[in-house]
Length: 102
Image (cartoon, rainbow, N blue to C red; front, side):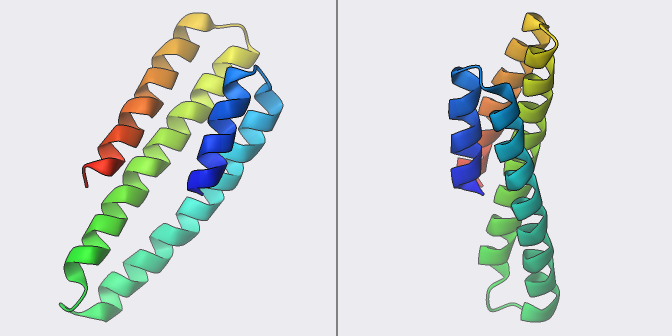
């Protein structure tokens, strides 16, 4: 999913908006699956891996928020809305940085 986000960001930079949206949708699906898996692990894992699971869930949440913002940025770009594109792209970049801080 991180690779799909990177690919989507690259497509966004080259104004290949449909390709970007496809990669962001792929990332969103993968992150949803990962989130469910980590939630299950958290429920079933007890205390042994609680910290690692909490970090993983934090990262998934931040990456999902980044993907949502990048999808909104891409949709805005497709509509020619530069202001929304810029704002949502900055939001996505900030969410990616926050994922590193989990």
